[in-house]
Length: 276
Image (cartoon, rainbow, N blue to C red):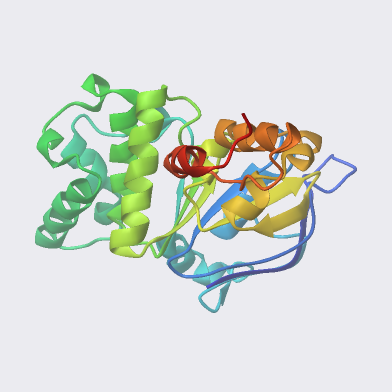
């Protein structure tokens, strides 16, 4: 478990803290989506989770290890993999195989174990056939999946992703979210994903909204992403399918259920007793 207890953080030279008294628990195997307008503190929060940043107040404890203790940070960073938005900034080798092997090699693992980890990680993200490809020949979505494999090869229990789809086209975004969902469900890796695409947050188990460095709300995707008016106040756009349900309710169908699954909405529309 990752425990974030009373955490505040300030950057040197800034008068106001970026994060204020954050309290949050992230459970093993959980898929958590983190939303918030620009400047809400999301990226800072992700860097606190694996010890890249240390709180000004409060504690971040990863499976019993406090990020304040520098002697534990290597262990923590093996447990909490961190991935950023631009895959080109994270690919360091001339072929995919070497890129994914980079992290395990730095851990000093035996060559046979490295090869096994590389092939396994690429198979998990569906990129095993690209083992010998140069990364520059891949699409944006494929590059990000290779970057995910590189983190996965380190064997983390938690994977933190800071807007991993922000630079991708819709197809690439779909590839990455599908990969993360598979990784979470089949491998049990906890996913903590920052995103500004609210539709992606619908795939999570839990959604947390940050604003001005504070946690505004936490709940299931259905509980959070159907709060249409509140989302607007928080600088977020509601999912289109939730807007459709909201509009139907405004037009007199007050018993029409809110939903995030388009297939569920279509089935409901077919059966709902609309007025003539």
